[in-house]
Length: 221
Image (cartoon, rainbow, N blue to C red; front, top):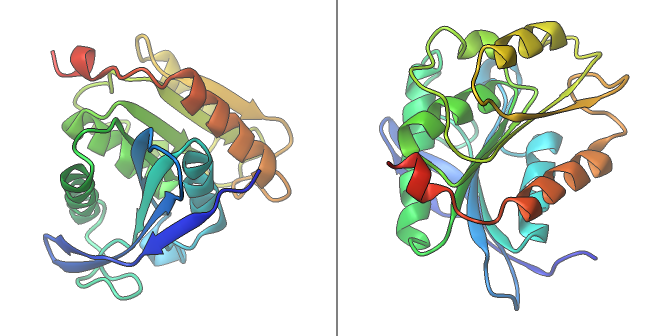
C-alpha cells in the first residue's frame, strides 16, 4: 500500500557550498529510522531524481523511514564542481550530519546506486550507520581505498548482466571481505534494473524490515 508523503526541499550546507535536497517522510506514522541516499555519477547524468535512487527512497519510506536524497556538488542547483569522488564523499558526510541533526534519536541508514553506492560504502566506514544498502556498487571506486569494512547490516544488489559494473568483479571483491554483506543477484538484469524496479524495492524493503535492530553499539565499539 502506498504511503501518504510529506516532502520538503531543504538546502544543505556542503563543503563546496549549498546542496540541493529532497527530504521525504511518511505521514501519520511513528518514524522507524532515517536514510540518506546517494545518486549515480555526476558526469554521466546521475541526479537525485534517478529512477533507482527514487526506488531506494520509496523502499525506505514504505518501511516508515525518513528519506533524504541530495544532489552532489555541481549537479542541479548544488554548488561546486565534480571532485573525482573525494569531494562527493564529503558531500555525503555533510548530508548524513544534517540528517542526524534532524532525527538524532532514530537509526540512520546510508544507501546508494552505482557511483553513489561506492560513495555510500566509503561514507559508512566513516559515519558508522545502522545499515547500508549498495545497489550495483562501482567497485573500482572503492575497492583499493576502503580503509575498513562497514560493521552493520549491509545489502549488495546487482544484476548478473550489468554492463557497467562486472558481477564477477563484485563477487571477487565481496569474497575478500569478512563477514561481508548479504548479496542478492538479479538474474538477466542490467545496470539500471529496467522492468525490475518493483522487485528491487521489495528486496530492499525486506532487508530493512529484517534488520531494524540497531547495530550502532557494535559498529562504534
